[in-house]
Image 1 (cartoon, helix red, strand yellow):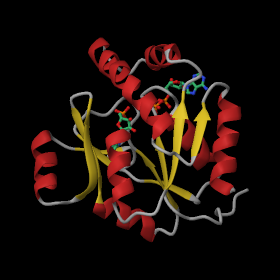
Image 2 (cartoon, rainbow, N blue to C red; image 1 turned 30 degrees about the horizontal axis):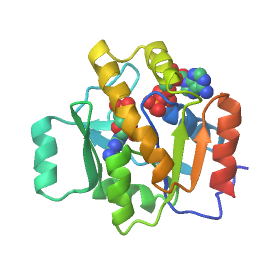
Image 3 (cartoon, rainbow, N blue to C red; image 1 turned 180 degrees about the vertical axis):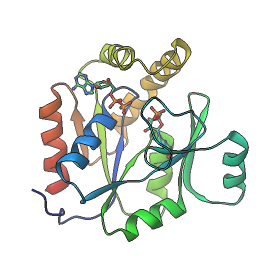
Image 4 (cartoon, rainbow, N blue to C red; image 1 turned 90 degrees about the horizontal axis):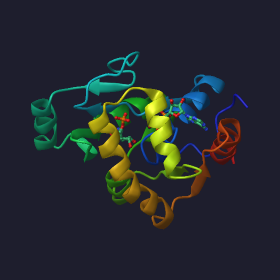
Length: 190
Ligand code: ADP
Ligand code: 5GP
């Protein structure tokens, strides 16, 4: 399946931190090169080892972020774990112009805002097999300090509730990775 899906609407992927969203969409990108593209968000958090500016995120300061909000440059933005994250209008325009299917990886407040926007998207929620799994995965990833892990886990309670109630088009439980990936691929290509 290296052709483009017949449904070319943007795909919004949401779910608690550590559930495996990034792992899953990167598998989609790797296995279908040139078909999908990430909506590269702006964030005030620093890059993790291996992350690249303008590939994973646009890393900016809080002042720069506030300036972009004041200039109405975002489609949506939200605070998460003491940092700001947002999808700029320019990013969506640029990525859509590439003729690829745009994938957005955003948290719940952003999902609400995109739903209220003019963007016609498909919505996927990634859930853990059990809430305890999030802490294990975040620790195994080794990218967050204790404070960040705590904030992410605290927030995951609301995120999991949101996943059950917000009317996602598809809910995928990321237990076995390959099984979850196949569900994502099948949904995107259905
Ligand atoms: P998110 O983008 O949702 O924060 P990541 O994709 O970074 O999550 O995944 C968090 C950690 O969990 C990573 O170390 C990743 O390798 C691991 N992981 C992802 N999916 C699974 C899975 N199905 N089983 C076990 N570990 C997983
Ligand atoms: P991380 O720091 O792990 O990359 O991302 C933390 C959270 O921010 C994740 O839930 C991710 O989906 C969310 N996120 C990333 N980019 C955006 C964005 O542009 N807007 C919103 N609302 N959330 C985002």
